Length: 364
Ligand code: SAH
Image 1 (cartoon, protein in one colour):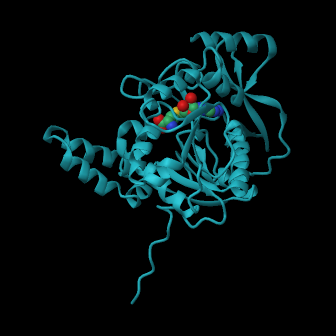
Image 2: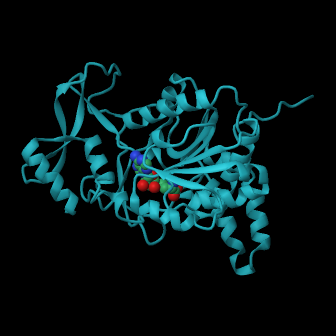
């Protein structure tokens, strides 16, 4: 068991079971032992690989997306470009480089990186040293400077802790983490029922509620409605709210048991896009999508970009771009194109953002 696992067991032994949400929060963000607090988890040597780490094309296309959104916002200067959970800083680095083809946008950009992990903030600092853009860091969205904003968030919502409720004897009870008879961490149920949850389901059904995500979407939706701008969320998850336990832990590119190695394995839950959209709309913002990541990236020109890069690359590297294109946009097993979705929260005055426009009507 990990150091954090032992700490959690001691806490439960003295104070009783904790909620799944609290467990996830500790596993990811405990200041000393939390998963993101002490390491660089990305890439072949790490635990998982994200889209910006697969190919420069991902960040480049998002940079061009941001430039078009800025134009539709009537080109505010400055424009806050805010990234939530920037990981290694790769997406922002690629986006800023691509944005050079829109020099007026590039000159108006003021970057804020919202990052909870000091270790990752240091890696981001190194990655962006030569980017030439003004960059500042903060730990929460609420601390980001005011003003019209373009927000980017890839695999951020899935890293927020979720509450889980289980259907038992006709009511809902919150799922907890407790100690079993042999002193191991195990799932349990809270004693009290949750009369506020009206959903009906079979006994044993699990309902996930990303309360932290709801608060964030409400705050962000309110900000964009008042101050202008748009936010792009890309993540894996479902378009329609449903039942199911989606908590999953990953270490060295393999799934492990979620309770086994808190702090040493990545822990995520699928994003319920419909639920996130409700909170953003409740705050006065418009929502576009979700649509499949594959459709989104291809609408932004992924295929052409992959061909151009392959033609310019030395022959031994040419295949790399087609392979990355397929991994990002393909919809087959092991590919991200349909598993991941893109959704935009925006000020209601903005037109549909690039990638979300309806196809042109055909004339006879
Ligand atoms: N966007 C990056 C990294 C995704 S991993 C990529 O695509 O590669 C999730 C990121 O969100 C990490 O940088 C993690 O430290 C950060 N993070 C997780 N929870 C956070 C929170 N509550 N506030 C701010 N950052 C958070």
